Length: 423
Ligand SMILES: Cc1cc2nc3c(=O)[nH]c(=O)nc-3n(C[C@H](O)[C@H](O)[C@H](O)COP(=O)(O)OP(=O)(O)OC[C@H]3O[C@@H](n4cnc5c(N)ncnc54)[C@H](O)[C@@H]3O)c2cc1C
Image (tube, rainbow, N blue to C red; front, side, top):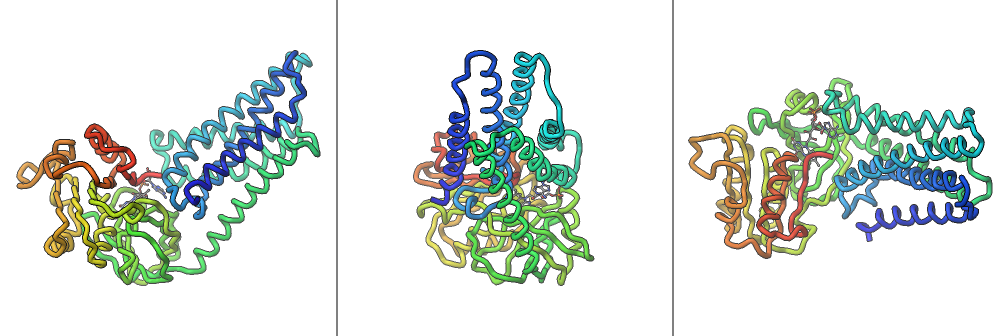
């Protein structure tokens, strides 16, 4: 049921929007009124898509469980584009209707609100697709994106002004407004709750040249190995923005940990964190865990720091002494990038079912497997490809390439699970 909640809510909203519209249409598709009513339909569907943006981007736990935050964010991007296109053509059709029916178009404060909202949505959506290309820092883009919380009320004022009081369309607009307010309240309450229970950093451990683990003490919560969290670090009275990191510890460990690799502005400061610093943690999220599937042989395929969810799962399997067959392929440039080496060696010695295959792409003198994780490498080490669950985690490009290799080997899509380290 949890997995289906979001599709059900989405379907119900679109059905309600269409029914409200149908009851508003006065069989006037003859004459120029078809422009007006098509424009109205686009407005109703477009508004629904835009409202769903807020629902999808607000990390609402009950909707995320079993569904996955990455999937919610993917829907968020698709729905955002669909909503914007509909609202844009709504405006075009309404202008066309007024010009052809009245010979002129009108302008007032409420229309201005609609136009401003449309232009605002175009800017925020445009930046969402181009911020990397134009070199805008993630945080700047994210803060600009929050302007959508101001734009939505503007567009609702515009919509209420044009709807007939007492009509079903009018009540539907009430429903959308109520949902929007609920999302805003949910976000504020969540921020408040998280801030009330800070975590303390108890250890900062260097794992490799550019990889550090942070260990936290604080309120315990249930999570599955492989899930992730959002963290805000509070250091020298400065609060960072929230960043997603896999929980690299196992639920069996005393302290929670994450293991960030240096990549940009935030991760390059991880090493400056000190024991005693504080953090706010929003967790757990994600569905990338072997515990979500029936017991089976596991194939873990990691790229670089994509090892973190697998460390959490292996630690869990090791601590619980689970009798599972696990093959871990781990792609890296060279030995210098490896972390958790000692622990993995101990696990290999003590877990008869565990096989670790490091694959180096950039180290000619490496004695083991060299190159990239291609179909041939997988078939060389796996006795058969059947009856296994495949988990892939790493940089998006590497993960996509590995998933393609698995598909070429006819591994069923339902058996391939991935975490892209990108939301
Ligand atoms: C589910 C998940 C699990 C992850 N687990 C790990 C892990 O275990 N170890 C690890 O090293 N990295 C992990 N990452 C990646 C990590 O979140 C980014 O490397 C980090 O946020 C980059 O921040 P930065 O400011 O240092 O880099 P930047 O150069 O500012 O950003 C690099 C890229 O990281 C992403 N990013 C940056 N800031 C944020 C943010 N606040 N929220 C969301 N995405 C952002 C954007 O795609 C951006 O283009 C994970 C990502 C996801 C989505």
